[in-house]
Length: 443
Image (cartoon, rainbow, N blue to C red; front, side, top):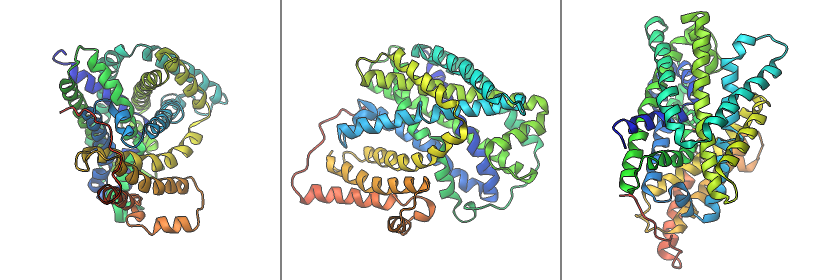
């Protein structure tokens, strides 16, 4: 690899991570957390930056990546889990969410009040997904388009917004509101789920490894090293942007009542730059959402073309863009109704699976530990997801709410620990459990 390739691949990874949720949630967290900002932001960064990096580190350690890690539970589990993750962060949830946010922030301010909003959304999504399709067709060009061209423009726009905001906004941090009053760290921790980046990291690992291999790197140790460099570059930039957006949001809390981060950023850009601010914030949202959709589309293309031998990469990319295009035109509200219950269920399973990966050798590669830990955690993760969806579960909900950490949305933690302990005890005192077939770690 050439001298600056790691930098550009890191910028590409940043641009793929940095989408709608990454823009919306930090400023709203800042406005709501107020004087508890740093505690809340620490929790947010832990799940929005730290967890995705840990996922990438885990993928880099194990030859075969996330598929091999999932196989430690069972090959069937691995396939089902990854298919659900790819479909959710791809065409059925994250892709249309990002496209809708790009439309609402990049186009709607200029056509607000028009009776033909539905038609405008249709035309926008045609152009948006056509460009996504064309760029995603050749994954070898992703680093050039995303890392070298689009991301620098995005970062410059973000720097202008945040620096001017720091200098001109003089609002003081307000008293924390809602759950930030008593549990700022845990509230921020759960808000980090909404970026979906830990799940995206499961998919982006294959994209980054492909980009590195295409530069002539085949040695596993070097692959790991370059991947970790790219991850650290992306993580550092993400953390800096989150903190900056959060501070801007905290300073804006005195300027009015805001119901979400998009309103805060719209108000900031308009107050600081007038009409040109609407263009600036529209550019930021459109570029951020576009790069994420491209990254997710390419990741889906690479995964499903490997999973289904008869499906070519180009065919999967076409199907992914068509589904994303169709769901985008259903509107953002319907998409967001699904996202919270899904994330509430999927994140605990992802966290448990990845954490166990780093302790793999301590329990001698025994499958029962993975199965037991994920089963215990999974039951309560599903219950939490159904509860978030609005289903009343009666006694089951009473049981869930009585668990330690349930008040802060982490009721699955103790069951996961108990499940791990049960798996270890069964392995030690029960019948000789089934070991996991030997894997190669990248040392």
